[in-house]
Amino acid sequence: MRLLLYADGDHRTGAGHQVRMRALAEALLARGHGVRLAARKVPDGTAPWAWAGLPWQAMPAPDCATALAMSLAVWTADRLVVDSYALGPRDARMPAVWFDDVPGLRGLDGAALVVNAAPGVRPQEYPTAPALLGPGAALVRGAFARGPGGDPVGPVLVACGATDPGGHGHAALAALAAAGFATVCIPPGSDAAAVAGLMAGCRAAVVSASGLAWEALALALPVVAVRTVANQDRLAAGLAGSGVAVVDAREPDWAAA
Image (cartoon, rainbow, N blue to C red; front, side, top):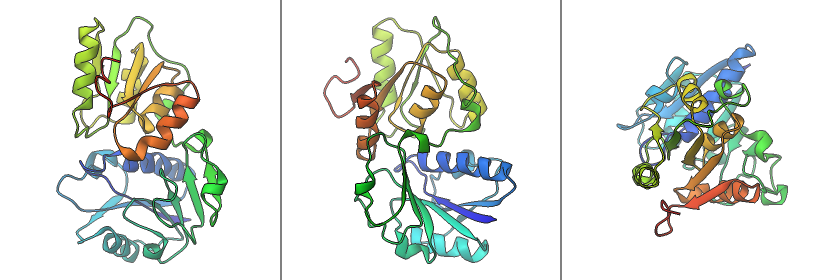
């Protein structure tokens, strides 16, 4: 089967959409499927490092809908997967699987399948499409599937998003240093193996309420999840309801808390 996986990624939207499409692409390729990753070409796009080593294309287009149409014209796909807030089923021109974080943000009538990994999301929130919901649907890169890791006397990993436009990581680092904790950050552009290896030497992780939280939890690290942007609300609430410590970067003195 030939699949096109479309996802946005830049310093405004972050890299999480493209990173989780990488996890899906690697799993599909391992099963013998033909896969092409696609995005709209933007000056600060994260695809060059998020998709390094995989077949991908970035289309010079005025908007995401045009970029998707151009991608489908270049790569004839049997199936389409989309992870983009800027697109909806009318833009796809074929039945597609849609990754979503915020139920109701866009109409998903006609979706072949909706995937939302946030704990507590209910099928009723997607009344017009079949849905794969909850943590069992979370995409975790293979390097994090090896089970428990961590070092009880290691440093605290701080990673509040690959782009972190609000500087939340810096605030967390300063607060932890003031409290006497040794800390470590993920070097820019690190691949999954490098990040998993770094996590394995840490005592805990302070990470954005995103796919990074799933990957740290897959290694059985104690996690503090930081809600940094609005589209993380459902995941942050679900993590908190499941017993994960969550702090909200909208609150004053959140880093000290």
